[in-house]
Picture 1 (spheres, rainbow, N blue to C red):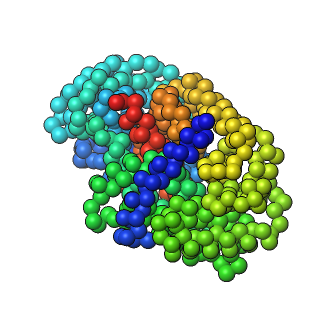
Picture 2 (tube, rainbow, N blue to C red):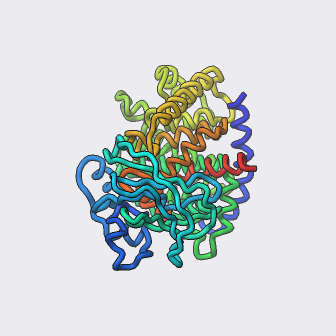
Picture 3 (tube, rainbow, N blue to C red):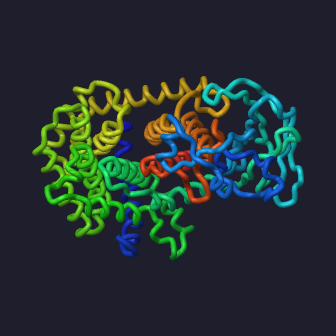
Length: 471
């Protein structure tokens, strides 16, 4: 029953999206962990998180190298006071973390414009964070609600980087994320095609699920920002991908890249092509050329089979067809479990379940149970988290959790799921073991388009759920 309801809800969102797409088609087819501010007080005391981020240097090795490769500049030194540089929301929990054992017993919330102390709170806790290995304590200033720009100060630890408190903090962050999608690099490589394709998938899924939020966000864009509208960006990215398709139908003669391309052009045709015939035909031609190339290639490895499943599932959702249905369902039945551990499979499952007709109800029920079990396991794991709310998980693992939570949360909204998503958003905003703000004034410092898409989907899902639960 829930699956039927979901299809009906998605159709409703697409009807709302139609007006947006028609309009857009007529227009066009922080504080990264840094040197603590107490060491910079002889300079500009109100230096922004994004300005300070420019002074940080990259670190090498393992985790740091992976982030640096995604465009995130790591800090020279870790801060001693961790705040959500992306901003706190009035009426919701507000916490600050203190590293080390020498920070005092109280902290002050200080108004940036005049240096006035507006709130004093107690510092409690004092345990070791498992990921950073540093002793951490916590201060809670949830009771302070006055909107403005502030910083945290203690006589011993110094001061934090500035942050804002506002009712529309999440809405502004959502808008910045949406506008920053166009800044993602389009890498001329098989991996680049996969990253771009899956990023487009999450962004389009966000539009399907929460189209009204995007429509409302467009009201905040002026004429010079028309290209920042998400539909316009997605259409441009689709054209870029099509321009890279070779005469034989492949992209870079690579099986996975071609399958990712085939799937995303099928999804794009289904979503946008119905409003503009020429656009739909262009996507359809590109999709079929890619599928024909895939059919001519051997498909023997596990990676190739997962990639073919994704393409077939998208084509089945878009066009129906016994061939695509058979490939998709045979793969799912043989898989038997773990429908969310690999992105070709997860995104393919989203496509299969989202098909308006022809799916196997028993198979869908089995898949959904597996995914709900995965989300429940995430919730159980989170219960053991300390301080930053990420346990010993990497950024990639936290984003993966957000993706799965958002999918299930959309089907069956849960305060628990929403809270985990919100905590992860705050983690990305600076409440993490490195003190890095991954979502600065430009929306996000992360360059991976898939990561951007996951953040956008999760943010839209969280906002949609909060708007319902707060009424």
